[in-house]
Amino acid sequence: KAGVTQTPRYLIKTRGQQVTLSCSPISGHRSVSWYQQTPGQGLQFLFEYFSETQRNKGNFPGRFSGRQFSNSRSEMNVSTLELGDSALYLCASSPGTGKDTEAFFGQGTRLTVV
Amino acid sequence: AQSVTQLDSQVPVFEEAPVELRCNYSSSVSVYLFWYVQYPNQGLQLLLKYLSGSTLVKGINGFEAEFNKSQTSFHLRKPSVHISDTAEYFCAVSASKIIFGSGTRLSIRP
Image (tube, rainbow over all chains, first blue to last red; front, side):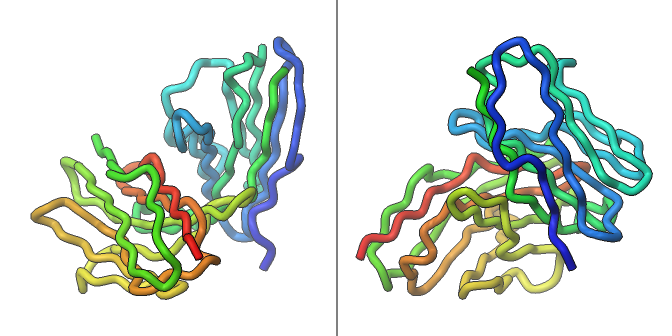
């Protein structure tokens, strides 16, 4: 079974631009969560989608948005990029939304904003 | 609300020595507890999880953790570490969503 796939793996963008990151969950998984990982702030929850609906949202500005498609694939978008958005963005998929459910992580997309 | 505190940001240890990575949590509701490992330039991988039952949980790569409800702790242990255990370890608590601790970087000295 293929794991969680995130594309691209690396990305360099200029301040003010926008970016879209993609996540393909494990086949059969309907829940997708996004996290931002930085050396200073650690792993911070961005949002969670289940069956194309956003279930939870972290404490990030409106520049960060996401969506989930009917095939469970998910995208997150960051508009008007700032230098502080440089981070590793991790996507995780789960079969469901129960709190006992393990999250399976992709390798991440490393975004550098210059 | 839930929170997780990993008490050590870095833990250096000699190869073949035992190690304990500490984790404390707080929550007003019942939670499930996890330990994840992140190797360099990789995503996170589940080491072990506590859902219910025995408070001693065994995971992959020889790691184990003990759930202590009275002390609200879930410390991770390994009796003898190897160079390949060099990684960052994250404790996590799951209620409505998964909340991760700040991570503990384990460095192994030969």
